[in-house]
Image (cartoon, one colour):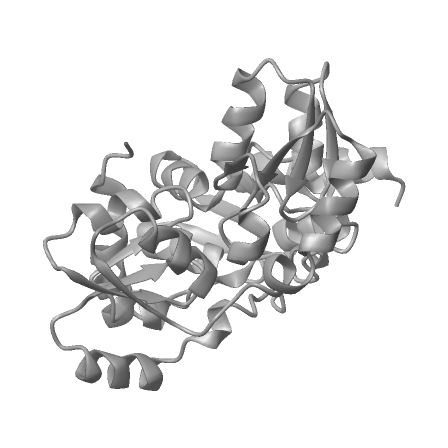
Length: 305
């Protein structure tokens, strides 16, 4: 089916199903273009709570759809591709977390939202890359067991006086596909550009940045500054949204290899199929959902400084 007809089909199905389409900024350009809301994990979590739609179609990966389902138990949450997972989220298991909690009994467990519902349910509070520092600093505990991203944990540890115990996990896109050489090359090619980097990148990469922040924080940095050129150190999908909202500015990827395979599994065809067939529904078991919701609600109550 040609693109225009496919888009019209999606619009008709969305109306029929009383659905809202949420898209992460790492999605394909055309998927972002048909979404009602585009954002990072925290922004989309808030939108999921505030929507009055009966169906939430989440164009992202499984942990994001799980989060939407946990926060909206009375709504139907759909993930267009059931195989859209997250390698980082898979690096933390329940058995491992329970063992770590015994090892550090006085530590507060802070789980990045890039984690499974089971991990969230075993945590004291969740965080995103946008509010991780504020979440950690809001806690009374002096020891923090932070999982699963070690690079984000290192970044947080540099912004707090608490002891942050790191998990040995990472996002392969930020950890392996954006390197020092990539940034140096980009800076040589675009000497007037400011460098924005996601805190999931390792310290040797973030040390070369002019600004370190989540996708939403980078978006604000780019729009509010008078600079006209930016090198973007995160998944390439974000450049589409940056260019739309800043047509007078130029954005360059830090690396052409910064692509998340799972995010790119979602296509317009799969979005249409999901709405037509009401698949693939993401549900979280009741007891797990109740405990995970406490950690998510506590996160949503934290004021971002």
